[in-house]
Amino acid sequence: MSLSDDMATLDATDQAGLVRDGAVSPLELVEAAIARIERLNPTLNAVILPLFDQARAAAAGPLPAGPFKGVPFLLKDLFAEMADTPLSEGSAFLQNHYVSAVDSEIVRRFKAAGLIVLGKTNTPEFGSLPTTEPAAFGATRNPWDLKRSPGGSSGGSAAAVASGMVAMGHANDGGGSIRVPASCCGLVGLKPTRGRISLGPHYGDAGSGIVSEFVVTRSVRDSVAMLDAIAGPALGDPYFATPPARSYAQEIADEPSPLRIALCTTPLSGQPADPDCVAATTAAAALCQSLGHNVEEAMPDLDGAAIMRDFAAVWIGFQGWAIDDWAQRMGRPPVRDAFEPGTWATYQASRRQTAADYLCAVQNLQAVSRTVAAFMTGYDVWLTPTLAVPPLPLGAFDYAPETRTAFLENIAASVGFTEICNITGQPALSLPLHVSAAGLPIGVQLIGRYGDEATLLRLAVALEAAEPWAVRRPADCA
Image 1 (tube, one colour):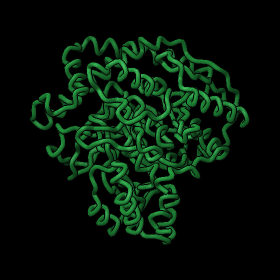
Image 2 (cartoon, rainbow, N blue to C red):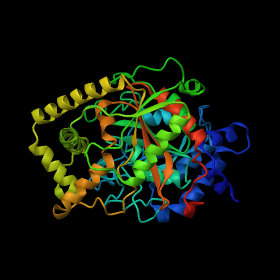
Image 3 (cartoon, helix red, strand yellow):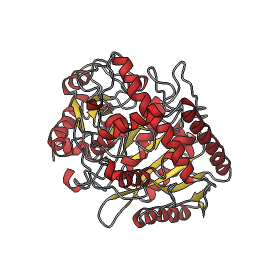
Image 4 (cartoon, rainbow, N blue to C red):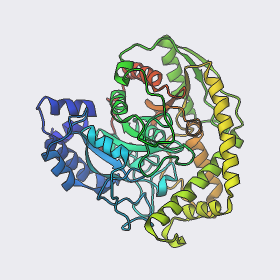
């Protein structure tokens, strides 16, 4: 077996340990990752911008003594900027027109942790869909089933990590975009608390706080170590999540005390979830009970249809802002031919929506946050499916006026359990606890109280030990 194949079975913590012990060099890890990318990417289309020469140069030089010193990494081509590299955000409007001048705060922290960026991963146009099929770069395929979506909008990173190109990859989440692809690709996907990870220096309040930055990983401990490495505000950030009293690594060293867990398998849409997704969640509930936790069926009193309408209003405003912001930054007016039909339709909707419409929707969602916060005073964890459906076929999110109903139904099924935490700002974690009879990963979502990633991570460590998932890997990527 080659070093490339050996590295594909290790998480980032183990890879960093090999570097610290002198068993491998950073350059050897980088070359092994590049070899897997070159072998697998023609099929998966996860990496859309290779940065191999820069990565080799970084690996051959001095590196910060961070927790992931020498570990190869991929950066999602959305939001986070890396100096002197193109940023396209899945859009022909930016493609070949923009090169970042500075590192975003999160990229600076990734580098300080010792990570070596090998390239950028695919994303839908402006991160707008729970799939990764941008017209500008083509579809990313799910390593578990090449005919299916890897989820979105962090689908490129998720496919890369699931296939073993790298052990972890950058991701961000405005409605489920970390957790959805984590579920589709069999990974750990944590959306941190609002304000836990800085969006600076370019952004502060993205979509009234719906966006969070982080990573997708194969192991809980990698997510824990990364949260310790990059959490915390930058100067001037509009949101501030109270830091934990001690490191997350110290937090997970403790056994979780008996928890009160609310079980819910009905999404905001009100439509029944797929039996595989329900079975995954009820099995997770039974596992939690076997570990000594109290589980009962419960959910807050919410008007799902109203919430989805208000979130749609915020999302329309957010997407309109994204296009106008880039038009101002680049000095290029938006024109229809530079965008996908669905993106342009959303942009036109944003032009019709007033500022008052947007702010009323924000106010309504803030009231929802208060309802959910009150509900969470009675529970430590809220347990749901991550998705209402297994990974959908590629093309399920193709937009056309005549297919608009199916398009919206597929979106509702994809974010019916996830978007609530973008509204409330609570931390949420998708775990790959189940595989369907068809061999597809099915994620289960743990939702915590605002600011309480520690409880989620302690429970996740226990679940990972009880039902290990690292042994499961896509057959075509072994």
